[in-house]
Length: 113
Image 1 (tube, rainbow, N blue to C red):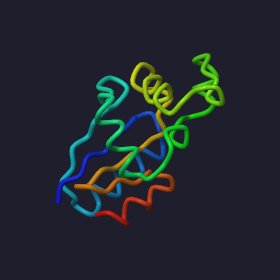
Image 2 (image 1 turned 120 degrees about the vertical axis):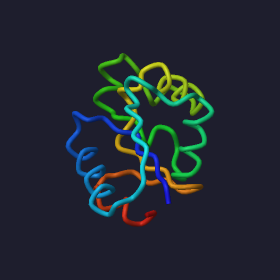
Image 3 (image 1 turned 60 degrees about the vertical axis):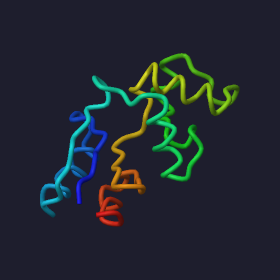
Image 4 (image 1 turned 30 degrees about the vertical axis):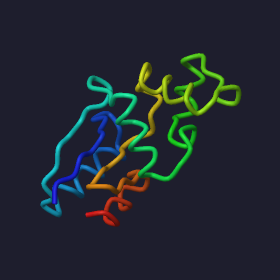
């Protein structure tokens, strides 16, 4: 099985999740989403697989710092903001086939590998 991890190497939870994938010898692709953000279509697909509303995977502090008022934004506007400002996307996100999970806590990844 091959998985994709949307990763920020500066984030401890992201590093811990990546370490689990490596420890379990799971074939994986690393996407450093700050330098290679997902497209709008890909982000919408991931949100659908997670089964959440877009606002649920937004880092609130970073969104405020970016001047975003999530409470006044539609789901589509939030997705657009995540594409334009990827630092607001919660991390890590691990995708395996048609399943995705947030790596918070990192052990969540075990449910899809």
